[in-house]
Length: 282
Image (cartoon, rainbow, N blue to C red; front, side, top):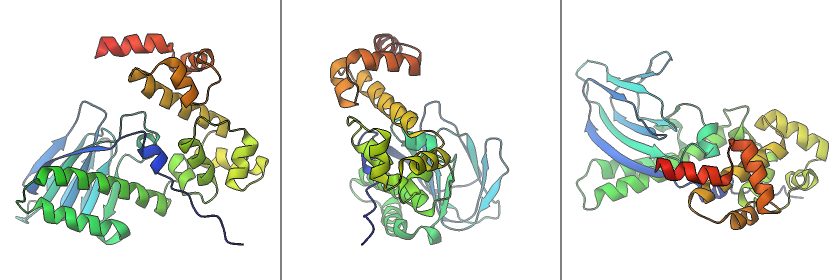
């Protein structure tokens, strides 16, 4: 019997957290540049030619000597420097927003993802189109660049999952051939009742084995992960003005009161207090 097909492990997350990109530099770079943002966004740097020295906050500098993608999922101060050898350095830089700090993917990714073009597999074709667009004066260039960068980010997420370089956390779970089925089910249909037995069955594992492997790989119990996922979605919907009753139904709570109690335990304030805080800070 053929093994069940691996599900789409990203769409359920990407549909709920919109990726936004904004290219702000294409061309030659000389000297150094510091990248610090005050919001929750990150950066994408694509080195076309040349050599860069990269210094991240509180880490040892390293050199990039071939065409490479540098992906900073969240706000991490960093510096890029040319090597001072009169070598032509061509670079594309973009701001990245994965949908805010609440996106589990943003929290699961390493501080920086470094992918040389030669190791990018399915990413290479998109990078070729992006670079051609970046260094050509075409109509609608900015819009095309921004959208292509969104595609690059999605393909980078695929790359990280495929390479399975993280041994614990959400991405490690999505890379696991069996756990990914249960995680995807929770992401796609959080409103469903998901007792442990059903999740284990979805993963094709026994109840005990599933619970133990999930805890070891993802770093928390299935029940805790599901609860946090539901509350993350609830917070996002409530911030958009969706009524509490509708949100409770959408994320799998039996009643608005049950959601309100869980929300208060998780975030330290009730949905009403959270809504008022958001309104004051807007």
